[in-house]
Image (cartoon, rainbow, N blue to C red; front, side):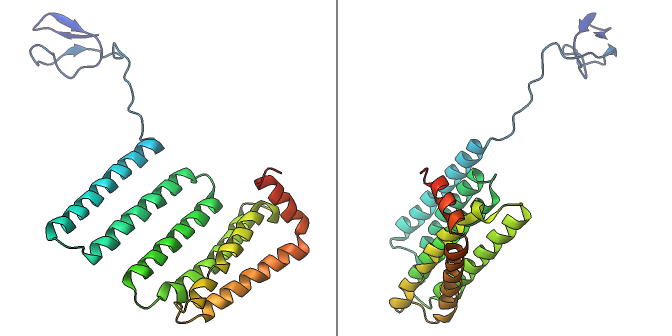
Length: 219
C-alpha cells in the first residue's frame, strides 16, 4: 500500500503521486482497487458504420459542391460512384473475410460492375469491354482453381463458383452484339475458355455438378 507522509494518508492501487498534494508517495504499489476495464477493439459492425458515415459525409459534400456550382460536374459523379462501390467492397470484405474464394469472387464482380459503370459515364473508348473484363474472367477462373488446390478443396467444393463464372462470362456477348466492344477477340477467347470449362464439368464431372447443385439449392 502506498502512503503520503505529508498528508498522512494511505492510498490503495498504483498511483504516481498523492491526489491531495501531488507529492511523492512511499510504499509498495498494489493492484488497483477497482478492475481496469480493457478497451474493446473495433468490431466489424463498428468499422462498417464508421465507413458508412464517412461515405455519406463525402457524398453530401460532393453533392453540395455541384449544387453551389449550379451544374453537374462530371468528375464528381465518377468520384461519388467510386465511393459507393468502395463501400460495397468494404462490406463484402468484412462479411466474406473467412472465405477467400467467395471474397475474391464477389469483389471481382464488384470491380467489373464499377468498370462497366465508368465505361458508360465516360462514353468513350470501351477499354473495359475490350480488355480488362475478359482478362478478369480468366484471372478469376485461374485464381479459384489455384486457391482450391492450395486449400485442399475438391472440384465439387468450387463447382458452383465455376458455373456462375461461366454464366456471367457469357454476358460479354451483349457489348459485342451492341457494338460497344471495339476489339471483341479477347472477350471471344474468354467466353470460349469458359465454355470449355463448362463442357469439361458437364461431361466428366456431372455427378459432382449434381451434388454441388443439390447442396446449394437445398434439394
